[in-house]
Length: 286
Length: 163
Image 1 (spheres, helix red, strand yellow):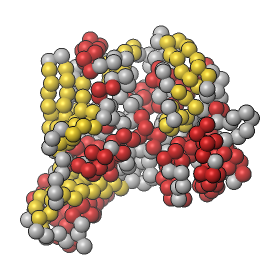
Image 2 (cartoon, rainbow over the protein chains, first blue to last red):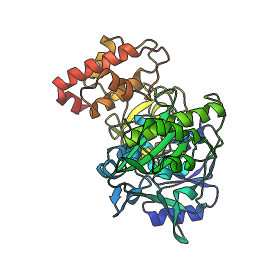
Image 3 (spheres, each protein chain N blue to C red):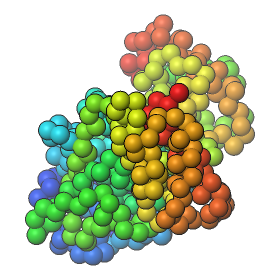
Image 4 (cartoon, rainbow over the protein chains, first blue to last red):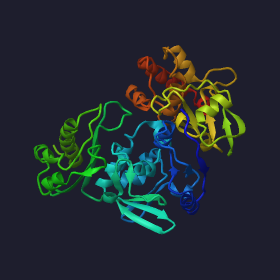
């Protein structure tokens, strides 16, 4: 299968990329690692008129320390995120979840920013950025815009980016002392998408849960926070029983899809079970 | 039409390509490198795996223009002077194939796996090859072959570096 014809632009800097995108108009797409976009183009489910290939924009790659946060360049590959010492030290949830994305060959090409902008509700990283309260940084000819994760994912395969906006990177707040985290992913085969996933970060203090943040993968047309569970565990004990009881509310406010991997009801069941497991592992419950 | 300059299996090629030309089609149809098959065409099966700057990629999901200025190694570029690469030899000796369609991709992904981990366990081999599917389900012997090659390559690391 061969993609439809398209124009091809290969900028070498962010300024050039932003200018190219603005000039190319609404029917252009940004090409990052291409591991989601190129398969869609081959199936003719996407047929952009032009591709802006970011491969040569070196300034979009890499992770840097930004004080109380990490700044992760949009073109940093999954492979590099998984190995980055700063990510391991300050955002281990991201390292753990990224290691479960697809397979090694896809992780060599696929990028952090690309998979976020793709906004697939079954993708693992959107829920992780939502749980970590990450902030998305976009550039356009109109300037720089910062978008909180809670506002970035709009709908199925739809982010809050305007057609002329380029995601340059994501600011991921560092988790300090007392935080534990875990990504619990349920899938049928190793390289498959999550049927349901749970991204969880828990801060313990004096043997109780001080604060929990929980985001669900593939439980709606975009990632969703399990606020009812977060409230229920806050101030309570670090115990599996307490987590199981609180996780009964995990499917509240969700609208899970039904497909050949499972019905909506099955996904609601998974959300409850996996949320309890994710909390227990993140908090180190006995 | 963009012009690309790509080193494939040690030879540098310069060609004008349509932007939509996939790397796998460039390798097979333009360069005659038909040792790399097209399997699922949907980024799932890994049959078309090649090394791009030493790292495994699925060549059905890379544009030829994205390989411009880079180095590609296919299964055809592994042998040196008519001698098989230790991974090819191990697949042969351990009979790590049935129909053989997935074999070129399995071999390339396995070489990439050992670059990361020179002495993988059975479990680590299975995990490292999660992106490569064998429809004959001949995984037992594939795992055996990768571990046999790993042992040989640990004893003769300079041969590995040469690939």
